[in-house]
Image (cartoon, rainbow, N blue to C red; front, side):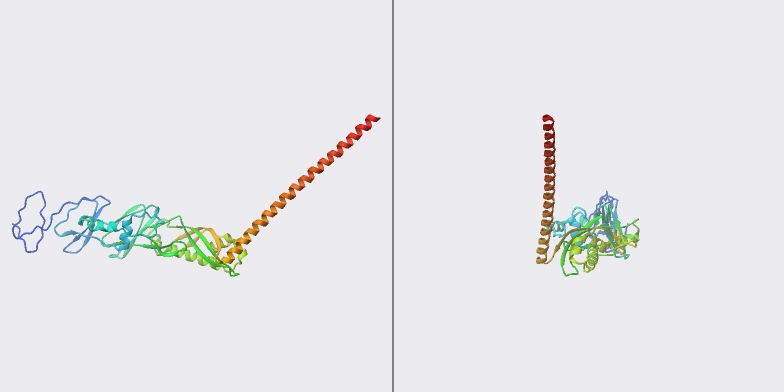
Length: 356
């Protein structure tokens, strides 16, 4: 005989038959929960309050345990529910609320709500997870499947986007390691006060080396690395262009911009990369896609200048071709005249021979 006190909870495992007395209330029925290696549930002990993550095996709650639903920040939950691929859906910046999902979420069972939060990290990407209980962070490199512990949360990235760059446009959980590119539009002013709009494209990648914890922690040290690199490069270009005349910049824009971004080494040669040591970000190339004056009058003058230069070049080529044609015509006429004179001389000689 087992003595029970008021408020005691116990569980009877089947198969068996049990007839409760009038003083006993059946609270719930428990069933075994089958879990794969990439599935898990959160279980909370109602006596101690401790929450655990159970995964990889079939599990049945005991009398002192219950399923626990992990609460996520709305932004992170929206990113997880949208199912965006960090690689193929890079252009999808503006996330819209999926109302159908939230309606479906309200009808989920308790077991579905207590499922472990997972995220598939794609190839050549990284995700940072912070444990608020141990006050430590860890970085997971893809391809891998991340499963959050009860006290862990994803680190959300808010990156700059659009052209020109605006902050907090791209929201994501995965940090792509590159090689990749980003495009920005900046405004510069030359030494003779000509304002130009430059559209530039930068190729970048993260140098993670052997993926050591120190190198992994550096990846997330800059919250918005896109905005940081665009501002740093734009500052260098503006400073270099400010000391250059418009004509010189118009003729040597590629060389001036590359020198401003990468700098020169001891041999006065342009370096091949521009490194950000705080997060091991490397810029490998700068593509100048367009150079346009901001002022409409300057733009019209430049257009006229370009058209005039094209006309002058065309006229010069036409004159050269015409002179060449005339020269060849004169040479041909000279050869014909010499041939005519030679023929007349031969004819005269032949006539003299006949007369003699």
